[in-house]
Image (cartoon, rainbow, N blue to C red; front, top):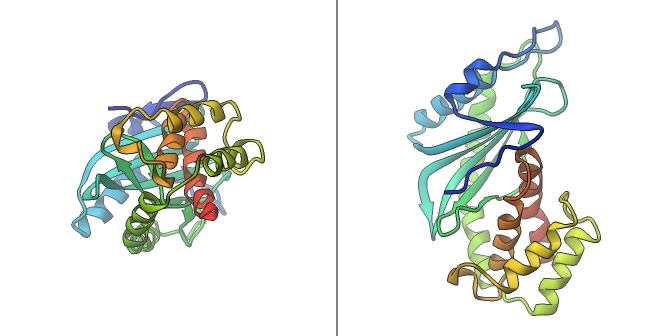
Length: 238
């Protein structure tokens, strides 16, 4: 199976290895969250709701400040497995946030339903991680059915060749996506010469998987960012 790639600027770590990354000291106004503590609390919150995790992977920037992770859940639908995307930063560059996603069985592509949604509280002195995660995970569960319907809609959304090329053009040439422009050729190749029979139909679903397949060539953090923007971008093309 493909996994999060780890290159310059980020390292792929196991759940156990997250323990070795210590957060900076807390201040009167900022309360860092140790990545290992965050994931432990996420797993506890999921377990409390009888949601089992079957696979998880994490990418941490070289300075240890930013964490991105994907936790694949036991629940599945129509050739996909529900996932939870999570990000955290202990350098005040972004807020703790969650998003619902899915893993495509046939190609192991990772995709998100939308961008990361910050939990309600900041990393303040009175921040309660358990309460914040409860809110975030409940919100995630409410997005399961809309995400399933989105995938079904994309599978039925036929594209002409001209329409598919226009989407790729808008994504890269018109900067509709936060992704390197050189990936446009790879998305084009994967869409018009698909690697899997499931993506032979000329649909928005096939095009979505061409994008997420191409994103596998990116470093972990850019991959997460591009993937998180893709769902909203393609939805705007409907």
